Length: 383
Image (tube, rainbow, N blue to C red; front, side, top):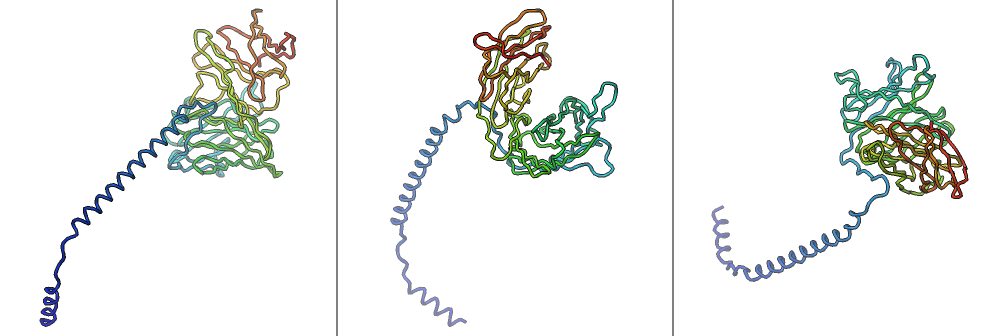
């Protein structure tokens, strides 16, 4: 071992170390710094180009509902029919994240009540200490008495309430509907299955307000598919007005302010939106965060029709809107006092629409659609 170590020491002493490559290292460092400067300049120019190119897009004013960004972390959602032994009237239950929810249809009762349920109750964390009260979900639940049922060519009629960052929707479904498939922006799919209660069939689902619904498809027992693209106000709940079969053409997209002004000292405005969701009317102050007053399909209207009557909370006035025959240029509104006034008919995509506001104490006796020559071409009364 000692002889090997002596041989290694002798061999190392014979190696003469050269000079350190200082000059070469300095030149290499200068080249690296130069490349870094070029890279930084290119990066700054690229960011500048993005800002210059993107600037007009940030200042463009949208003419329809603003698309919501999908949640970065999807909130897990479940939806299922009630289990055996559930209380009467329960039609669906599930969870949105850690929040449990349950929807029940109220049994029709009392004199003058129709044969089908008109109210449904939404409970958050049912069975817990959270009370079921309030008009929205901020207090743990809500009771809604505008339960809807499908009409011809409409497989499901959904409505609901929102709060606590989630919303819950429920409604009646047509006899042939087997289930719905709801596509969310975060990639999740909800499959509400109809459940019977008090002579009707219902579905319900819940989702985060921030998670946009892309589309809902109804699957029927005869193999047909009907699809609806919802209208959504920013921060609001989806509204479904138009259901179409595969390949059926969709209406053009249009946004028109039907009317605005002051009634009973309060400002009002009514805006109509037409697009793949059908035709939806939004009244102020039900702006961002609220729901449309009414939505419907876009079959060409051939008669004078009242679409919605909306009385904003805390207001003594009411906003009225509707459809007019294609040849109508204005609507004459005759009040019960005998006084009358005219409102213009506006073109909204494929439709002709109008709107006005009633002050406190005013009531409508008759609506008359008239042509440019002043000839009456249709009449209607308030619903």
